[in-house]
Image 1: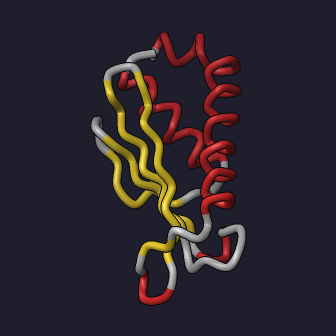
Image 2: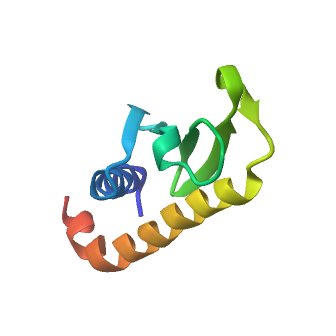
Length: 102
């Protein structure tokens, strides 16, 4: 899929999951999760998606006290990335034809 189609699908996924988009453009999307939506004992997460041609580069970071990055929530971060990956694959299968028309 093209970069524009990837951006469109990511926006639809965030809307369907009630995730909060902090910033979005044709190069990257940043999604913030409050501590209420986080798995574990972190104080929030941030999912960064970089659009590299037709590829997506995804990183999830947890925050600890005073909004400092926390390396101790790797498993919970991996779950967020896997959730996005699963939703993206389903979206490509379900919405692939409609996205190609947009």
